[in-house]
Amino acid sequence: MTKIKQLKHNGILVVRYEPKGLSITIKGKPHKLTPKQEEMALAWVRKLSTPYVEDPVFCKNFFEDFSKELGIEGLTDEDIDFSEVIDYVERERQKKEAMSKEEKKAAREARKKKREELKAHYGTAILDGQEVEISNWTAEPSSIFMGRGEHPLRGRWKEGPTEKDITLNLSPDAPVPEGDWKEIVWNPDCLWVAKWEDKLTGKTKYVWLSDSTPIKQNREIEKYDKARKVGDNLKKIRKAILEGIKSPDKRTRKVAAACYIIDKINMRVGDEKDEDEADTVGATTLRPEHIKIDGNKVTFHFLGKDSVEWHKEAVFPDEVIAVLRELIEEAKQSPDDKPQIFSDVGSRHVNAFLGEIVDGLTAKVFRTYHASNVVRQALDESDVSETDPDFVKKEAAVMANREAAIICNHMKQEPKNFENRLQRFRERKLKAKERIEKAIANRQQREARLVELKEKLQERKAQLKEQESLLAQR
Image (cartoon, rainbow, N blue to C red; front, side):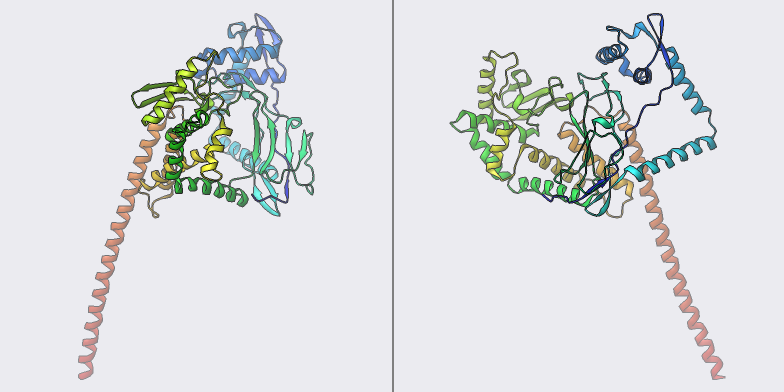
């Protein structure tokens, strides 16, 4: 992996909340909000017209955090009157609606100018002497955590980082940007500009260099080259997995069975979940209640990464079924509250097993191979040609990536407007096709007319030549 020698930048933008001076009423008593309390109250009020406020978990989580911030435990939405905050939000909405076209245009241009100024300052870095773009140069602002699927933390307050929380990655020759930063480090192996720990989930968040950065593209190429090796060695890999399933060694059978599941239905390993996530599982953390075996048909049903439901069926060979039945029965006999089928097997064991078959092969590389393969097949079947309009090419890429998201279980459900969007695309594509056909027909007519005119011109030239010849003979 290529190390970078120089990285200079101006840090990242940390947006500070601007207080409005609002108040609420708690159990009949007025309460002047602090800036953080006000920010939380505004975020809640802006969710009042959404289905989220009908979710009891979402509401419970928010008001637990809001109560703590107010210093009064156990408050619910019935204890608090948000009228002043609601009025503020409504006034802002009405103010925007009342703006003339010219005012709206001026406001858009002002916002655009401001964004461009900020991007000029924060949006680029110097990487080994070359100016490159930074993809997300703004720190995440504070907000209500939404999560995906039935995430247990939905509704909690997610505090954004301050400069004191943020670590910057800068080469030794780079000037330190103005600000009270947590730490300045130099990691030449990494392509991140800044990082911080999410105060709610504990995850490390990063600001990365843009995907268009040459060194990043080269690393992506290396990543997909590894995935391509899976396709080149697929028969060898699957043969080794089945041989492992038949092994007399119990640990080998366990690991091989987990690898078979990962390959067959593109499941994650499972032991990379965060402690604060709910019942989030994968191949090696499956429990008896997650699997149903009916003959050779195996049904998997559990919460996957980001608490998105995983529900898939597949037909397994007899030898895999036998190992699964054996492991399930053993797990059922375990005294543990949540016994795992693949006890004492984790990503380390799975990756070691796969790495012995093909150097560098891991469960993650396996998933990249399957996702890439699905994208390639979808693009091959899209019938998109080089001469098609850009929007047709873009839609083909979007739909291909959608197929990859489905097999990787990244989608909880279709977006609400998906069918409408798909219908609009089909109509637009049909109109584009009609325009192209009409343009081709018009061109053919013009070409035919041009040929006709050329023929007439030749005839006229011949007539003139003949007349000139007759005149010369006189």
